[in-house]
Amino acid sequence: MKKALILDIDGTIIPFLVDFESLRERVRRLLGVNDELRPLGLSLEKLNVPEQLKKQAWELIEKEEVESVGKLKPDDYEENVETICKLHESGFTIAIVTNRSKRTAFLLLEKINMKDCVDLMVTREEGLDRKVQLEKVLRLVNGECIGFLGDTIYDEKAAKELNLPFRRVTSPKTLPSLIKELLEQAPCNGV
Image (cartoon, rainbow, N blue to C red):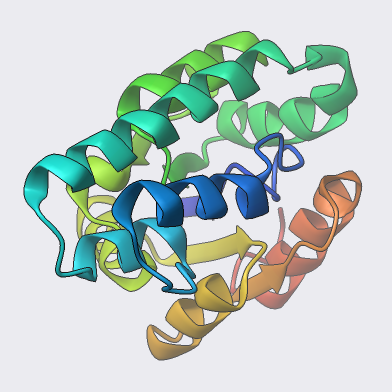
C-alpha cells in the first residue's frame, strides 16, 4: 500500500514567524487598497491592480519570508522533523504544500534539517489555491493512504472538498500527536 503524508509548513511544522497582520497592512499601503487580503497570496492575485504593483508586493512578501528563515531555531522543531523523517524512512511519501515561494521553502526545510525527508513540494509558483495544490499532490502521489495536516480553515475546507483525511494543527507542538491520530483515522492501519 502506497502511503503519503501531506503537510503545510507555516503554522503546522513551525509556528508563524512572519507578522502577517503587519505584512498585510504594508501590502495594502503599497497597493492603495482596502482589501482584507485573506488569504494573502490568493487575494493578492485576484486584485485588479497593475502587475508592476503586484510584483512589488510579491517582492515584499518574499523578503519577509527570507527574514523569517533567519529567525528559525531548528532545535525548537526537532520532534516534528524527527516524526516526519521517521515516517519517510518507513516508506511514506512526504509532500509539502505551501504558499511560500519555492526558494524560501527550500531555505526553511534546509535550516530545520528536513529537506532530505521531503519527496514532493508544491509552492505558490504552482498555484496559490490550497485545493489546487492538494489536487496536484494527489495526482503525483497516487497513494492508497493519504492524510493532510494544515493549520487554516482554507486547509480544512480543501481537504473536506477532496475527501482527504485531515487534522487541523492549532500549535506545531501538537503535530506529532496529530500525525499519529490522523494515521489511525486514515486507512493506514499498521503504521
